[in-house]
Image (tube, rainbow, N blue to C red; front, top):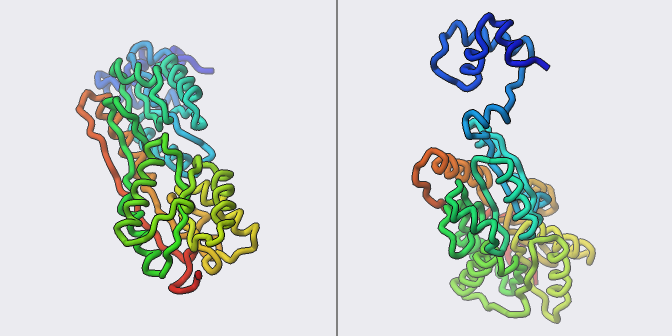
Length: 334
């Protein structure tokens, strides 16, 4: 592997000049910079990031901790964060908390030891000592998608209330009155917010809220399936099931198919979160889409403000209601 002195010898300059080029120091002539870059290319020289971080007190890395990497929403979100960070000259290291506070804190400690420049965290339900310490110490930190009470941390999140209202209005226009809902856990801000928005929309449109039609899931497919079993086993089952995230919608769809029910005719299905395969289901699944690309980009922008010493602002984006055919046509589902 080529060393920095090999690059200097090939370019005919000093080691100090090569170091200035690597660190984007303006005190290098255009001619010398071009010779160093050419030598680095020829020798396939890769700068030592660890050594450079010791000199600059920066690693150019962002620690991203997400709730569940198997959830397509978080996968898309991580991709958008990585893209925005790369464009800003940063590398993203990812930790999958698996929706567990202890795993989240493990990654907080690990990333701190690795001296990441900033933390971007989709927090679990608990305010843990590690998260509190980050916030109190003033480390560059932002929350993504979810909030935690009592901590003054800038947050980038999505408000789905308007889109949920659009969904309920759509169902009312189709003539549906019996709406089942599978919520996420109340311990998570995203679960609470979606449930509150759904109940408010039902009241706004004059729809009856029947307690037996409201199930509590955990943002996992199995809870969506189990909740659907209970909903469809009621003496008067709901006409439409609205799942509070895409994995619970997948579980609901599995149970509907397993009962040989016709989606959009025997029972309707809608999902909070939109995923690419929804359009390939017959009929395509009605969904509420979160702006994951913008969400990730805005979150990185908040971190860059923190790193540059600017005062960041929390940001709230809005989800979009996307009607498809999985809730049937007017009068189809009795």
